[in-house]
Length: 264
Image (cartoon, rainbow, N blue to C red; front, side, top):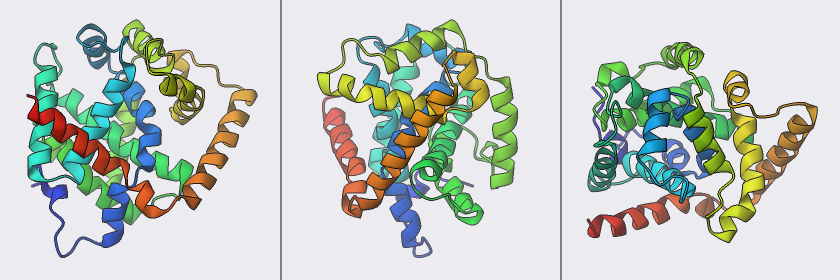
């Protein structure tokens, strides 16, 4: 049975390459994709829209999502507990937010987006390695009270779950409104707004075709070429960045989360 903090406690059998993968910041590039997939569930979208200050600080959900991932997957048990308590507190006023199906979907988007990020900007993840990553990501759902047996135990089982759930998502006006706030922030810091053209290209380009269409994003030959150029540039950039720098965002986000924890 998956343990909520299992990925935080490397064992003698854990290969060093998996640890590097879990610490790699490449999935950060798919953070926007994960959020847009999460809010393609109408209940999640309604909760984000009505119970958060997303319009004022749209980057906050992305930062908090990344904090949660790093805390549970590579942090200490204390980090995982702190991150989980933050999420549970945020979900308290939101009807349906703690529903197992919603929590499972949120965790699944994080795993799938991590694989898609490495595929787009690094190297495709081989099936056997993808299974090990799937196992390492199980605590993301288990920590939020998803029964361990609900997390897919094989890549094939995950792909079956993913396909069936993706076919059932429905992008609502709430989701489109949140997407506008995320991709066109008006009150975000200047450096965030400056990065948004690149973020928009990556986020829209990485979405599944059906979900992209439901959001109403344009996706023709021009958009595809722009995405391919950006993907090529980011792949080159990632290849030349030293490994320690690629793994730096995780510790920085954990440090920020620990600081936040001392204030609560």
